[in-house]
Length: 151
Image 1 (cartoon, rainbow, N blue to C red):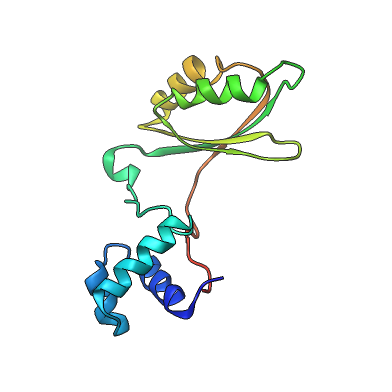
Image 2: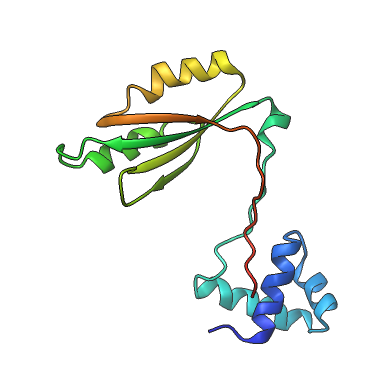
């Protein structure tokens, strides 16, 4: 279980991930070495896995985002492992998730435009091993993206 000071550190860091331990300490009225030790302990316990930059792909010219729902042919031995190993090699795949149920995997794919998307889809996605069924969902808008929970 988290102590109150750990919750306060995480809440502040989730709201402003570029803050230094000194900034966090000043905001929470906690000495910087204490904040640094707490952050290190959160990392050691696997609660804090890292701090990440968020890339605005459209600003870099990737205007198309597609979510692929994939069902694999599970009669093939190692279908998941073979598929995931091959999918990891596609640079435009930015996210892979596995599921229980009718859908086995979901991939997020980015492309510069529809021509680029079609090229990726035909030459890389459709050649992935063990696909039984695939559905492409074109991303229209992000309504909410939030990693914070009430701590």
